Image 1 (tube, rainbow, N blue to C red):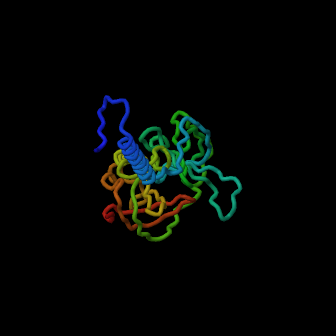
Image 2: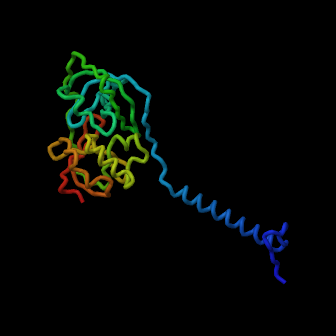
Image 3: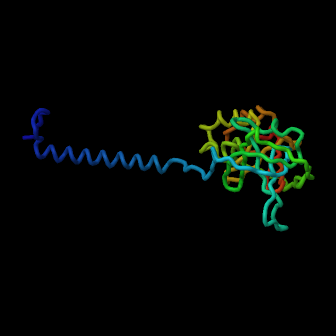
Length: 244
């Protein structure tokens, strides 16, 4: 005769009790296995940093074309290394720094801001009220150098979020945020499948208009263009008509 259990009876029959315990244990193990599989399947966070609230002081030469950049003297200079460390400049929020540095190309300035960095790319979110222009004007320290034509596949992201303000700062989930940042003047960055990073410029070497890249952001695309180098920064000169 099969075991039968009524809920208000204090104890479950021995055979049924063993069966229920086994079923509960199996379900528990399956739940843990599913949780572990989901955890392992997640994309790991990139090693990127936004030093929010940690304000630092900087002094260097301003380079405003194509994107505002602060050139800071690099100690221990050798002939094989660039003379300056290059820090991209952005304003707070989803805004580029172009309006903060009009008519200042080549001038030496002091400013304060918070660092944003990932791998060997570094950016400063500038405190607008901290900018102080100094008297000296420096020559443009480095011209663009062409590295030839390249064909690359990857994704357009906004450099501010990608370098550390958001994590992850790429992919479909970040598309709307990246579109608004780039429209607001944040320098667009092309990240290849192998992790190379190139700032995007138009065929004349200038920044793209705010909404020109909107439909391409966070989409897997391929492009052929000219790779340029200035100091330790790399730029990709592309024609939007060639994106696919």
